[in-house]
Image (cartoon, rainbow, N blue to C red; front, side, top):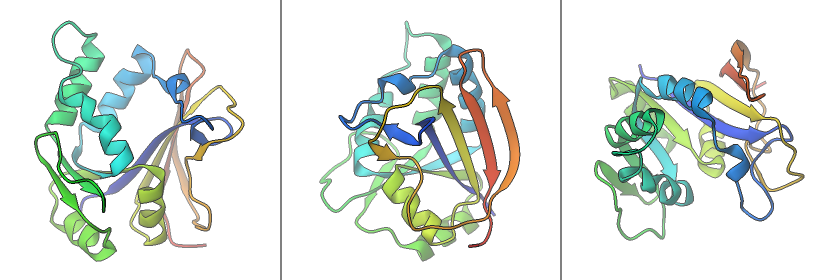
Length: 187
């Protein structure tokens, strides 16, 4: 069975974007990006909410000729994966290998995990919160950036309690710290 992985780049105080919606402080340097690319290789499908999909859709053309190699590599990995966008408002998609689902159904995701040959990633904190609440998330990958933003959109959901098992950590020259946890049953 494939794993469902939630990965996020967050400030030390736990936000993926600040109160103004900015996340420029989270842009990975080449070392972090190369490591993140390695984490993307086993992924075959991305599950996105509308807002994150609209941000990530830029990778349909980003990372092509003339870009640093880590960007080109990520662009290729992203374009090579399937994308499912959960949205009640999005009318059409602008990227290949992408479909819209009008509602998040945990049973559909369980079936998708059971049938998938490659791992899946859930992106966006609201969609991830629904996946966490349904007990679907198998791994949590956090990249903690050495910055405090003081508020904004949380990386991890409120109202969900899980016992996690620490599996791996890595520090980068930029001060970014990567943490990987294995999901578990509700505590």
